[in-house]
Image: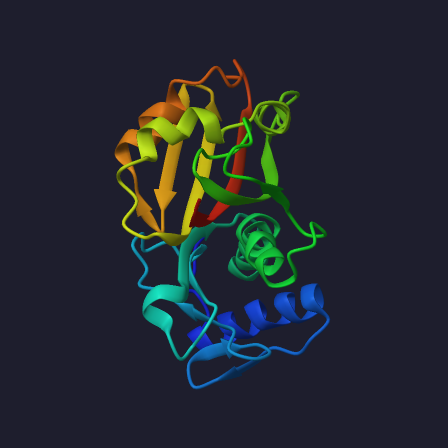
Length: 228
């Protein structure tokens, strides 16, 4: 796929359209942001890949206090055109990161799952909101990694590598992206948008499927809301 990513205003318009549909409330592009109801906004972060299908998205819960209410994440889409790839990227972001953030607004379990600080499937000492798990790939085992992620909890395995390294006491975003096949493998943990090396190693050490043929990937997101 070759080409140039559309202007930021166009991309933000795509983000606003997806969020409007998800929330049932209007989002509009103004002042270089996709602005939602109340103090919500999304801005485009600095691109660290150069790929036209890659997006760095900053979800701002309170535009009046962006320094401690911004959750950064990145996502790459795929498709026959750049527009299709970007649309898929936003869909994947919304189904993982976005739903966890929207769940924080409603806090009723309708969009994402909640784990208490003492839940054995959660993150010890933190209230966690677990977003969706999306997957993609090729071949007969294209959904193998996603299926594994649905059946196996990640947080207790990642917590030892992450605890003591979290710079915030609230609103910590943790993205997991992993999978591969055909001799390739990726295991990445990003915390508030930055790659976390120890967390990535812990993810790589888990026994998720490595298809012999084809490709299989999964992506999920957890919002650590506050320490207990």
